[in-house]
Image 1 (cartoon, rainbow, N blue to C red):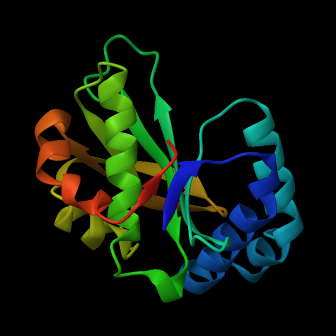
Image 2 (cartoon, one colour; image 1 turned 180 degrees about the horizontal axis):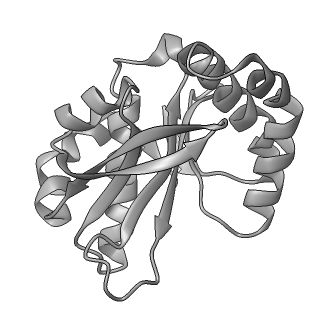
Length: 183
């Protein structure tokens, strides 16, 4: 496995992982109209612009190529924010889940935040998403909730936080065993 920063040539694969995950996990949670608008081509255009704008996306891929998952870290500029590190998107292909790839991507982002002297990390997750269980297993502590408007309905998002990234990284450094890192 290889973990590295994505480039524009990865756009199609990232879009495919993102689109397939949405169809798999959320098709019963959103309207048909939303899913009709949520096309693979729109995902491609979104990710092309996002990466071209200089935003960071990490991908995990097989040594022979083929992206299996991705994660998007963001650093908050809000000086009041205790959790300046944020994960804004995090997906692994369905057939590769429960193999440690999500954890690998997560720890890679924690390392990015640590290098930037950020000690706290947060992620907002739809309360009905299976990702809530993942983030709890990863040691996330539920800090709060917020109401968001999505697909013409109100949804609740939960905030999970990690306070000590240095210790977290140390405790989870094993995830990089056997990984070719290009970060």
